[in-house]
Amino acid sequence: MSQSAPTREVARRVFATEFNDAGYTFTESDDERAPVYALLPTGESSNRVFFVGTLTEKEDVGEDSEYWRGRIVDPTGTFFVYAGQYQPEAASKLRDLEPPAYVAVVGKPRTYETDDGTVRVSVRPESITEVDAATRDRWVAETARRTVERVAAFDDEGNEYARMAREEYDFDPQTYKAAALSALEDLDESDDELAGDESGSDDAALDDASDGTDPAGAPEP
Picture (cartoon, one colour):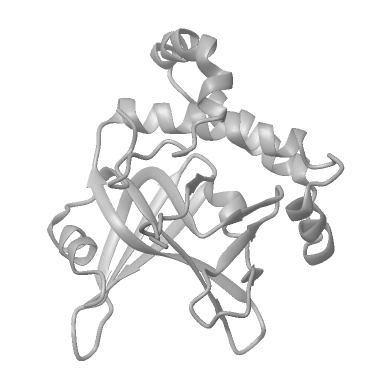
């Protein structure tokens, strides 16, 4: 029997304020190579994330070899990305970029527990692409819609990830909806026209299986 090639997990759109609260990780099988998922507080699993923001700082924090840390800001907070020898393309991009710059990032969530028990969440980037302000604004608009959609479905019967979120977190999903709506309000008036043009395709966008990324992990045009 032939076996199809494994497909990569959907890259979830998520704002920094929610992502940084996603400190609980899990697998869905006992296989030692099973994917590791971060549990988003709005009730969704995430093996990969897709976000767009402003690279405001970068620093080589490696000792024996290059290990780049990037600080990327969206309208709700800050993502931290780390790339070294095992992420050569992303590390090279961080090395070459000059802040401030708009960047689109696809990567995997990582968690780290500090000595005092605090869980820090960061991203191990698969790709980092320099983009323009319009791409950033489209990402904000679509991510806000998806966040609101997840919050609306949070109390649906059978939403297993929402049930997990209620068990693992003490966060009110409505706070992420409020953050998403606030992010929309921060968009310039010129972006209101863009959002209006796309309003007729909201349902289709929410059903997009690729979640706003093409097979190569780049942001949607």
